[in-house]
Each structure stands twice: as structure tokens, then as C-alpha cells.
Image (cartoon, rainbow, N blue to C red; front, side, top):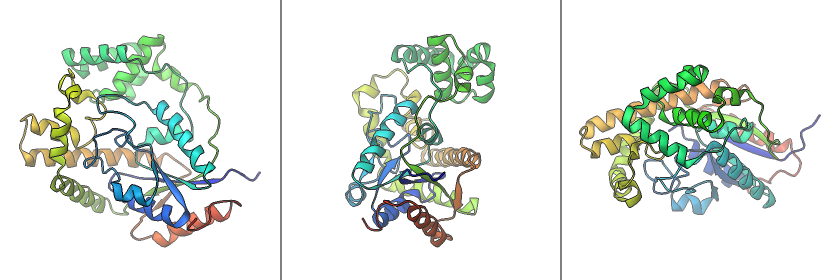
Length: 326
């Protein structure tokens, strides 16, 4: 049976792979608007270190899902799925092509497949868990998780505070392990679009590593440390008992810069740790992408013509799709 839903393009891939520049080019060519699928770009004040589109890029193409929360707040994948769906609906009403761009696999999964039903975030419970972590350390809370949900503890490492916190929160709110919630099927209707899923990544891993290092150096040269100093000066972050546990400050680069400004290491120490953390993020992104059977892989530098042809074919297969340059 033919899928009559209008098309959308998803540009996935590891950090520093060139997704943003490609998205801008495709949006201008095919009459699109960009929906960011990035867990750092939802936070205000994370600009240089998050590679957020600047004012000129936003003037060229409409962007959505940016600057939704302050850096001392949290934002869940379920919230992203709801907000992202509304953004896509609005783009379709305008007769434009939704282009989903980013590297946050959980956000993509929430939007494309939906999430299993489970309790919503509870600020009081999260604050209680964060306070316990500050006093005992996250490995101790990971041990607590292992006692109530060994399946989740086996998947979540003791150095992954965000997922430990969420798993404990769900159990404390519901009495049901998060692993059991996750086995339940999603309860969401399908998206109103048919999504062409494209993975964008250099063919050689060494090339990506070089891009990661060059981008971090460019960020520092552009004033990244001043940006982190401005975050540290915000009254809400100065008053926070554990700012390094906030999702915004845990973003790669920001945590390492924050610790550098705390005096834990010099600039070279910060650079080494930030680049290493970004490489680890890219590795996790590759792992997630390889588990998605519908994804088509392209090296944007070497296979741009083939990538453009894939997009053109996906749009041509759907009558009523946005016209080229529309």
C-alpha cells in the first residue's frame, strides 16, 4: 500500500559530521524548514559550545526547537516528541518540507517511534536524587538502581547520571522498574510524514576525529570560555547545589570547560578531555545509528551527488511535495 503522507528528511549522524551545513543547503534548495533534534540546542545560553545556528543562518532558513529551556531547567524526550510533532505540523501547514537535523538518538526515537508510557518527570523527586548523588556519589545511586532494577543497571553505566536519575525517579514514582515500562509498546499515533532517514558521516573515522578537534579549537577561539563564564555567573546556576549534574552543563565541552574554570586543570587539560568526550559521544551516536535498519549512509564530502539524488527521489515519489526552491 502506498504511503500517502508528505515527505520529511532526517539528517542523523555523529557530532561534527557536517549535518547543519547540509541541512541549510537542502532547506534552501527544496523549500524546507529545520527541526533541531539536539539535546544541547534546546537550552538558552548554549551557543558557541553547542554549535547553535547563528542569526544569519536562522535568517536564511527557519529553525525550530531551539532555546526552549533555561540552562538550570530540564527537558525530557517526551516533551521533545510533543513539541517536535507540533513543529512538524506547523511546517506542513505552510507547505514546507520538514528537515529533522541532529545527533540525539533518544530524541529521534521519541519523535519517530514514540516512547513507552511512563511517569512524567517530577522536580521534587529529581532534586531529592540529585542531593543524594551530591552526598553519596553516582556509583552509590547506581548500586541503588541495581537493587531495584538490575536490568536497567546492566544497561546504564555508573558514570551516566542522567539515566540513573531517570530510572530511579520512575521507580520511586511508580514502584515499577523503568525496564518494565520500556518493554510496553508506545502509545502514540504515527507521524504525519514519511521520513527519509539519512546518516551523515565521513567514511574515515580519523577524518571525523580531526573535524572534532578543529571544531573545538575554533569554538575556543570564538569565545567559548567567555560563554561558560557567563553561564557560571547566572544567579540560578550560582545557587544550584550541583550545577555539573544539570543536563545543559553536562553537554560535551561545557562540563570540561566548567571544571577548567574551577581550577581542576589547565587549558590543555580541558582541550584533551573535551575532545575525548566528544569522540566518545560520536562513538555512541554511531552505535545507535547502526541499529536502525532504515538509515541510508552517505559521506557528505564524497557522496553528495548520490545524497541529493536520494532526496530528489523521495520528494518525487510523493505528489504534492514541496517544489524545488519552493
